[in-house]
Amino acid sequence: MREGLIIKGYGGFYYVRTGEKTWCCRGRGRLRLGQNLLTGDRVQFTPLDKGEGVIEEIKERKNALPRPPVANVDQVISVVSLAHPDPDLKLLNRSLVLCELEKLSIVICFNKIDLIDSSQAKDLEDIYRKAGYHTVFTSALEGRGLEQLRQVIAGKISVLSGPSGVGKSTLLNSLDPNLSLETGEISRKLKRGKHTTRYVELIPLCDGFVADTPGFSSLELPTIKRTELGRCFPEINEFAGQCRFYDCIHLDEPDCEVKNALEQGLISRARYHDYKQFMEEIISKERIY
Ligand code: GDP
Ligand code: ZN
Image 1: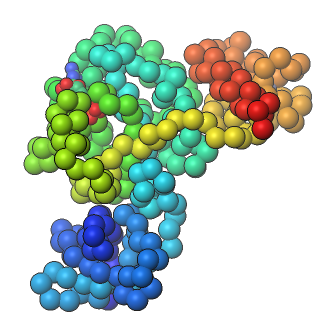
Image 2 (image 1 turned 180 degrees about the vertical axis):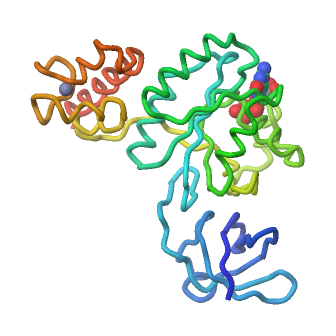
């Protein structure tokens, strides 16, 4: 038997990658009969002739995302456009919260650095480094920052997230010119009309794998406890344990170390502002249910 990674499932066949080779496999027994195999599953399979094989067993999953349906995701790369369209930091902060809730590692990729001044980039870098996030700055168009992005992708299974137009497809193409993914919203919309059903596929790229479909199509915050939100902001979480009240939500409580850290500039105002807004959302949901 051999071990491999399912990079695509389609019509009862599973494409299993081992090194540079892809095997076309079916599942045996219960695996064929609907015990669901997912893209991203690591499996044991029996190789047959002509690059075919039979999957015998799934190895235990570390996680499984619903959208896109991928198992064993190592990280989410959140792509943000620095200009055209302007950076949507509220959306970024929201997707960071969702990743924290799922306990997924996150890398923030600020793309289109060719369109802004370096001082603007520095401000963003400060905000997110201070929050404890790994950031890379790229220009898919000019090929800048691609080496850092390669290092992020190597050896891991990644899902790119970010709204359309931020440059996700252009980035992947510039990392591997053989990919030639469709870029630009209009050409993709024309194509999508023809292919109504979508299967998620892991693209082998830079010694790692990247899902071909972006993550987090819905960014509504789930119903969580008030105190859980602070844990989804690493820089708030760092101080939360020192507040006077164990259930402090860092709004107007006395002796709140998070508010102190904010006053001292250790927490960015922009990030705290979104924390407050997300808290309001969570509280308004409590009133409905
Ligand atoms: P996606 O929807 O996130 O996959 O975005 P696309 O890859 O389709 O890119 C959207 C638009 O942004 C296209 O017109 C790209 O040419 C452009 N674009 C992508 N990356 C860059 C970049 O680094 N700099 C500039 N100036 N434009 C970019
Ligand atoms: Zn507090």
